[in-house]
Length: 221
Image (cartoon, rainbow, N blue to C red):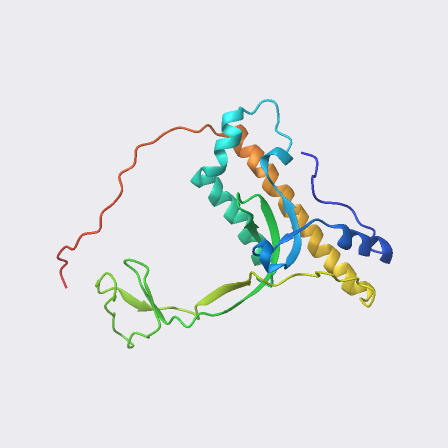
């Protein structure tokens, strides 16, 4: 598939790098009233060239399928992890049709223990050599984390290079920003390619599922 978003940029030419950054498509980091924007791309279906061998119904319905949403989440997480979560990609827009570049990071969450039965987290440690009782499911299955629990955070309302003219930026600083935006653009191409591949290689079928109900039962201690 031909790249829709990724563009080659001569990293030795200052003017070309600045033009690439200033002319790049942008979108809101939150809502339009927030007036903060960042580098972005639109992945709305009508913007992507649909191969002729893909059925129209599959092309439109695949967006709502859980397995596709999981694949999309994996791609976004891979991008964030590759940048140590300092830079992240997220979905925005009323119909989720835009991929936006965000700033963020990772920090200690403060959680000390968790329940191995239901996953509930707790800010208190379990005494050494003991197993705690979960406050939610009441199972005797709360244990300490084996390493410090970390939490990813995002600055959803922070703009990125909004109104920046880049005149005071050094060459290496410009190169780093261009490479970052190129990697972001490549991510958007990867999302489009993955969507097309999924539509080609899978069909949508209906499956009956049973929704579990939470009840209280007796467990031996």
